[in-house]
Image (cartoon, rainbow, N blue to C red):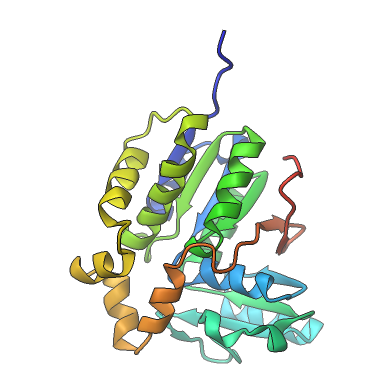
Length: 249
């Protein structure tokens, strides 16, 4: 008798998250351009931890209290009142090693807090930069999974959907998939995987156009690079830290 496999569901937008049982699943927060890519990079480069917050005011307040690095963006640009933005290139090892980053973004950190409010027991963050770490962990845990796309202000976007598809294509043999959004994500990823950057460009992806307007094509290419910052990013006790593959939910 074959054991029952856990399920994978994909929420293509924060506006759809309420349709899924996050309290019984590992929730993967996906914001490829650029929050979760930057989170992986910052932790990979030796930061002590990241405190994700859902407002600029909270970011400034907490940053002052702990003498941390205040960082974040609104609409793709450095948010007013913060010291740094949401580009992974702003956080080399010599700058962030041993430090705490307080981070707020338009979509990613807001989705994380939404998942918490809905009762998520385990949250990790996912990006192409830590794709292998995410997939290895999900296979290991043998728990239901919700791939939560941060999207753009509740509007479905291509790059987060592509990452969900990349995860599904790697781990689907270990899971049951009865979810049209997951099937759609994998199908799109199969079409795009030979050159993710060109796929976004040719499809006139909204976030590609938004960031390109600010001259951030280098950021986009980095954020689409597999395993460039391959660490497991786990939310624990109000902070994002590097997790270990063996730990259980």
